[in-house]
Amino acid sequence: MTPVEILDSLFPAGHDVTAEGDLLFGRGTSPDGRVVHVIGATARAPIGIDQAIRLSAAVLAIARSDDEAPILFLVDSASQRMSRRDELLGLSEYLAHLAKSLLLAEARGHRTIGLLYGGSAAGAFIATALACDTLVALPGAHPEVMDLASMARVTKLSIDLLEDKAKTTPVFAPGLDNLVSVGGVAEVWDPQRSLADQLERVIEFLPSSAMPHACAPSAENYHLFMCLWPSNQQNYVEEKRPPVLAKSTRHLALIIGEDEVASAERQFCTARSACVIKNTNRWTIRISLVA
Image (cartoon, rainbow, N blue to C red; front, side):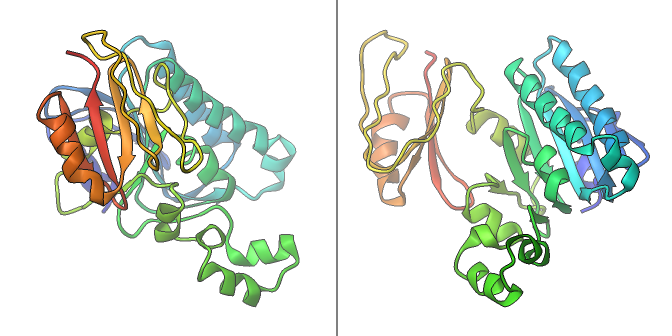
């Protein structure tokens, strides 16, 4: 999909997103009236200091606003710009500044969602798509933190050895499927369906890890406890495998096994505002903590 097609599907009610070279800036309106800030790095162009500081400025301007509207970051870039000028002027610091700007916006109430619809690599990928709280992708996206040839040069391992390891160990391999399998991408969207609906589901059903009282995933075989329902009673739910995705003052999301879907629906969905949803490679139950 092209940026124009993506924006039309995301915002059928209209948007004012415009291009500045290979960058995008503007806002869109979801079908239910929600305002979404949009920024983007497009056209498989590399990200240098000029692009990084311009994107950072846009994110910081949003962070200073009090609308708490989410930020959608469209990404189809090359790697960071490989030029003497950019390196001498401290490109790594510019990229770090962009990543920290996104974290600041998230902390100030602006949900950050990356939409990877093309390529992205290395520092540019880390400072844009991976710096967002939630990363989703469209089929055909091709992310790579480091390609195998570069990895071979750095590690001094043979390319044949790395290619062999990439067949069984996703962390070694570039590509969308591998990033999904290691948890870097939360969902792969269906381009045949409304992107607006899929964006709304991400915003509503996959709570942000930066929400108040967020809980990071723990090790396997630990016990989870959930309390403070609207009735103020101490109700607890114990799960032995799935980690907490996020807990906020409004929602709690748990990863559950496929064999636990039926019992989860019986226990929660009939009695409370809850729903079970299927992501790319996992089931999640999202429970409202608000009466």
